[in-house]
Image 1 (cartoon, rainbow, N blue to C red):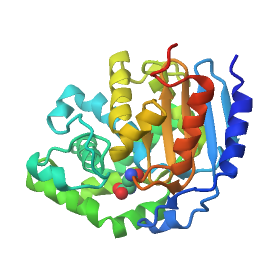
Image 2 (image 1 turned 90 degrees about the vertical axis):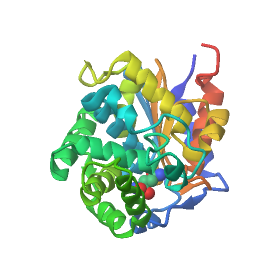
Image 3 (image 1 turned 135 degrees about the vertical axis):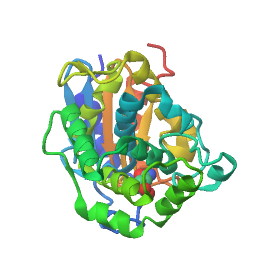
Image 4 (image 1 turned 180 degrees about the vertical axis):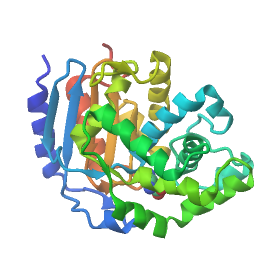
Length: 310
Ligand code: GLN
């Protein structure tokens, strides 16, 4: 019998004593101000329990974890046609890299690198206004998490707009290839604000629960996506969710997971659990240093890696 209360408490205590916490992201100024000692973890299980430790109730900037929710919405609106504009291969490059866009004619390698998520934002926009789309995104994550307190952190969004030169470059480059329908400004308006959504580990684990349950959200008992789509989103999280650190993460943890430069990771154990961890210090690939270590310890103690026997 796995004692999850004990396991999460042990892991939080181990992380508090960890010598190397990584470096907090500094290119988005408000993120640089976050205390690197913060650590939170929440596990929502398929039987509806929630186990948590540390700062599991503190909101943090989910950043690129939001790309999972953006992709889910865009697939719902555009279906398989989305894949004409975005690939499904790991990039092996940094999250904000531009190099592959030249030889690949403005088609991003996958929806979880910045370039891919910017195309997803363009798809979500369609002919709507950025403000309406952001309202829909926020409603979507609030419904998934069953919590209306989730908000967009305007200070973070503004800082991203003021410093997001690489994202402006990526968007302009793809626009030149004809892979954005809306103006760069409007698309990035959606992208920057979506990245600035703030959530707690508890809210994030709950919001990701549909990916553990074959597409069914336990909060509403409604299907968010089909079984096949949930499986495919999980596959993309496994292969691309940690950028050029995806192979290493699969090697160490072996779960579909998506990271963000705010230090959050959403990890899915299909059929069993939805897990959110947060520790703001990052490794050299921009993924949470202790978040990855905490998940590694968790799968060692639970046998939850998808590569473990059931
Ligand atoms: N908003 C961040 C950026 O665009 C997201 C990157 C991330 O979380 N990896 O650079």
